[in-house]
Image (cartoon, rainbow, N blue to C red):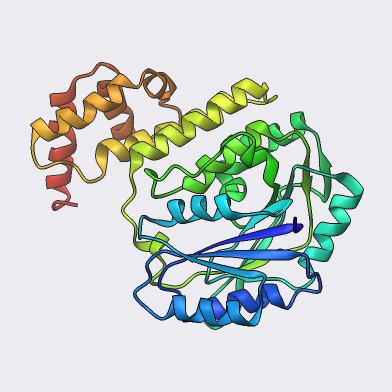
Length: 332
């Protein structure tokens, strides 16, 4: 068994993937494996992966039918042999000395999960922003962890990033945790909420782990948001916090996030017909947890009015009101 398994889904990243892999190969530690899964790329990515695998047997390459990044990550997890798992996207790069930092923390604290800060870079490799750890470096008990999760996730997104964590593989494998292939955005937060539920020991490092590449054609920048899935994920977060009895106004924090996505679900991309709108609203009405979480606190008057109509299930009036406002604003 190796110590670290690096999970790397690859889809049309030929321009970046060699640099990404060499950032791992260049680490001082040798006790790792890369599980690179090509998701039926249309470029030369698979050929590059195969060439690099011939150079280093620790690089294990698989090619699968294109079914999306979550399916590729699940496949890679099924092939991983490491004691610990880390995810690395094919266009990001690992910082030097990271495994040494992980070795030190594991020796001192033996955590189930290690969290790390990271840097955002542009296509010219320039750092333009950093995502810092929300707490000081060190071990963290469950009570403190869930209080921080409740308070900081909506503000920073820190706990939802897929790449800034090292996880004991047994936490994932023994609890049969997988990425939900039906979720196309924030699937990483959904995955890690289930991991957090089963973990017991948490550690925050102050060493930045990787460079997160952001560029105009990034898929996350162009993806159409499934707002209902975001509602479901936020409900999962709320239930986890309730289960762990997080000691702060968790209801206010999570309910505001749920309400934000309920507003988006209702108002954004309004269907062309009332019939279609009624069908979509029935899905929301059936979700009693989402309906109960709706709050009017701090919202503009228009959204408050729409949400009151939602609570009263006055679907036709909702549609008329939203459609009228849109027409008054020129169809936007």
